[in-house]
Each structure stands twice: as C-alpha cells, then as structure tokens.
Length: 245
Ligand SMILES: C[S@@+](CC[C@H](N)C(=O)[O-])C[C@H]1O[C@@H](n2cnc3c(N)ncnc32)[C@H](O)[C@@H]1O
Picture 1 (cartoon, helix red, strand yellow):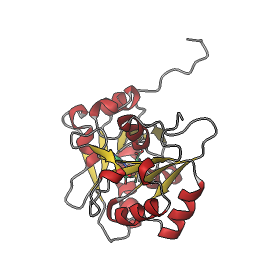
Picture 2 (cartoon, rainbow, N blue to C red):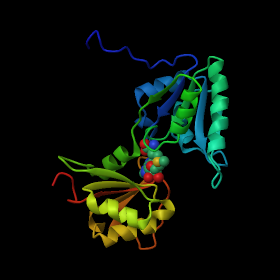
Picture 3 (cartoon, rainbow, N blue to C red):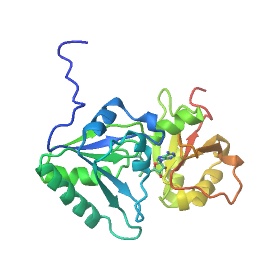
C-alpha cells in the first residue's frame, strides 16, 4: 500500500454522526468499516415502524454490543415525516454536542433512496460533523441472488420507483435496456400490467426480501395473476433477457 494512501477512519470520532450502510438483510453483508464503527458508537439510531419494529435494527442485531443508547425513529404511516426527522435530528444533535458518537443504521446503502439523507441534511445544516459509510445496496444484492447481471457494455440501466403512474412507468421502461423496479408493495399489480403491455414479462425476474431467511425469487411470469408483493421486493428486467447476450 502506498504511503500516501489515506489512513483508515474506521474508528468513530467524538461528536460525529455516521450514516451506516448495513446491507440488504443478511448480517454478514455489512462492511468492515460499518461494523467497526457500530462496535464503538455510543448511540445507535434507526428508522422503525410505529410499533417500534425496525428491519435495520434486526439486520445488525447480532453485531450490537450491549448497553448502547438506542433511538428508534418511528415513522407513522400517513403522517408528515418532516416533524419526525426534525425531532430526531434535535435528539441526535444533543448527543453529538455531548461528544458522543452516533451511528444511524441504514438498510442497504444510505444514499440510495435511503431515509438517512433527511437526517444528513438536517445535521449538516446544524453544523454537526456527519459522515456516510456506503453499504451493499439491495439492487446489487438482488442481482447477485437472482444470478442476473444488471447491465453490460453501453446498456442504460434505470432505477424505476413503482409508485410512478402507469404512463410514466411505460415511458421509462419502453426506452431503457435494463431496469430495477423498486418500492413495489401496493403498486405491484399496476407495474406488472405495464410490463405485460410492453411484452417484457418473459425477461423480468421478481425477488422479495433478498438475502433474508424469508427470501423468495421467481420469474415474474410464474407468479399467479393475483400475487401480492411486500414493500421489500424488486423486479429486475433486461431487454436481452440476460445482460451477457
Ligand atoms: C426506500 S428504498 C431503500 C433502498 C436501500 N437504501 C438500498 O440501498 O437498498 C426501499 C426499496 O428498496 C428495495 N429493497 C430494499 N431491501 C430489499 C431487499 N432485501 N430485497 C428486495 N428489495 C429490497 C425495495 O424495492 C424497497 O421498496
């Protein structure tokens, strides 16, 4: 290693917040850097449902040392999220001002559609040191689990959110070589309808809860017409069927 190579900053610095990418589900898919910071952080914060259940907290459960201060940031469905992030940033900011280190758990990668960015903006604007540790994103994990390379050569790869309306979905899908369609949940039937219309069903693969024990994956066309999809699911499509063709 060259002498100029920057020294590792895997040891957390007092008064700093870290957005830790913790991977898509399997506890082993955390980076060494995120693991090391998690071991030393004084405070661990994570997004949670109203009842306190948190996928991010569950993913790293085997790695959390005892006796840490924990902050569950409870996102209430149907309520504006801004006041929740405002309050969480104030609570985290108080710990930072006391010289504590705070790890904010982020499923997958923090800056890939991750809610951590809302805290990142607030904490940085309030003048707190805040760093982001990248993680294994669900898109990478889904491709690996499905044995479906995402893109090759000059392919254009798009990430398409399922909540887009059918016209926008059709427009985006019609012009791309490869796509990852995320946030399926209650939008699944609409997304399937558009894929069918475009004649892409035989090139679409479905996966839910990738790398978790409850993972399920099938060719999209093998699912029953009335199949439901959870929020943690994705469809990968490649126009050539396989990126290597
Ligand atoms: C708000 S985005 C967050 C993405 C996350 N930051 C990442 O890097 O993977 C949530 C979407 O990511 C996808 N996702 C996240 N984890 C997943 C998993 N384990 N299996 C399948 N899809 C997943 C789903 O499409 C879900 O609706």
